[in-house]
Image (cartoon, rainbow, N blue to C red):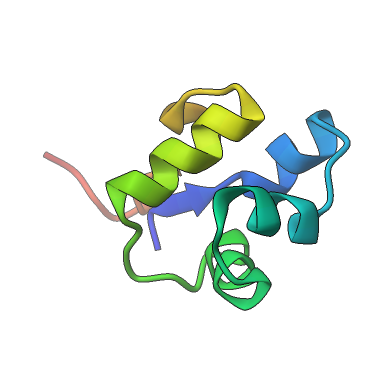
Length: 73
């Protein structure tokens, strides 16, 4: 998938555990884990906003686009 989730990087930078973030943004640790591992198919803007607010970061710090090698314009 060309969307890379860097949530684990931001958690490490903030020295925060997944469960603590899940509690702070009122999402289950299981759902946050699905996002962290890149298995999520979608994320609500309200959830992304809450994560960014709590981690004091921008959406681009968490989500990254990397085109596939065969993709071209």
